[in-house]
Image 1 (cartoon, rainbow, N blue to C red):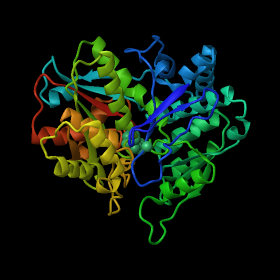
Image 2 (image 1 turned 90 degrees about the vertical axis):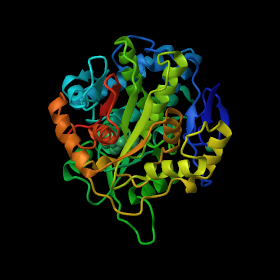
Image 3 (image 1 turned 90 degrees about the horizontal axis):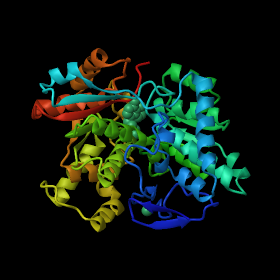
Length: 443
Ligand SMILES: Cc1ncc(COP(=O)(O)O)c(C=O)c1O
Ligand SMILES: [Zn+2]
């Protein structure tokens, strides 16, 4: 029996081994925040194997792995991962592997850090699809494929189309993974999506749906059309936890790799700065931090800072509201109180009112769908919701090119912009070890 728990309302449910895994909490749609996450037993600290493939290395953080073990078919999981990765490699020339992570000497000097401290960069730009997004979607696909193999009545499900709303990296990663698995994909994109990206999506066989803003409609029209497609039977093949909690599993592998490497280097991270659009990336990172604390890889909580641009900062707005409601001293908010916060979503999170513009266009989501785990992570670690000026976004983008092994986009280097913003207000301590993510390639 597999169990899942909603981060929002706390509802726990068990799912029989050969039944379909629900993507959403039964209370989804009641106006509150619900994110259904698998409960997984005894995760390993450094991964259960030394393999470079993240989904083999961190297999025990995947529900699919536990389902296969319970069904006495441990090789099924491995076969599904290996075959999907092989197909992706055939399609893109790239496979999923542990991505580069290093202490940047030039950035460490720039921020005045000593040899005991440093700026540590995780470079996810060379993943299939050119960003970290593939991690989320590879994970979801592994769950779908394992489910197809385990269920007796799965045939009609494998005919269901997949759906995603995105204008860039997430759509590309989804199209690569869907194509590799021979599944049809409906992509909901804005009218101004980059022509090069749209061409790549077409070449990968995705069905393109251009979504115009409708009068009297608030929120992202692409997301609204995606929700409609899902209500008509499409599978939410997305990077938003409330629509598919399983997307967090694969996302976690990124920070799991970082924390394992730092531990091996005998470094203790003092802070982690993560760029936030819809919030799934940072939420997955926060979950990996929780796991690291649980398994003893971390003995203390690093500060968890998030960064958005000044042009769209709904998470910073939500964090301010939390401080107003609970006091700026960031008290220890207990679990029951967090459930109340989740139930009162409208007090904290709603679509940003103005149409945003920034070079970091991948983090301009008008709503931080995965805000809840981030409020928790910042509150528990005394972290901040940074809001970077466009000048810092551009400065970080320039700085990143000189310290990166591969060209990184302004969205991809926005974590570094957060560090610039932070450092201006309160300089970093010389011995700090700070983690930044380069998440997307410059196209
Ligand atoms: C390169 C890159 N980095 C970071 C993000 C932010 O991820 P999330 O939307 O999960 O917050 C995105 C989202 O599109 C992205 O494309
Ligand atoms: Zn719920």
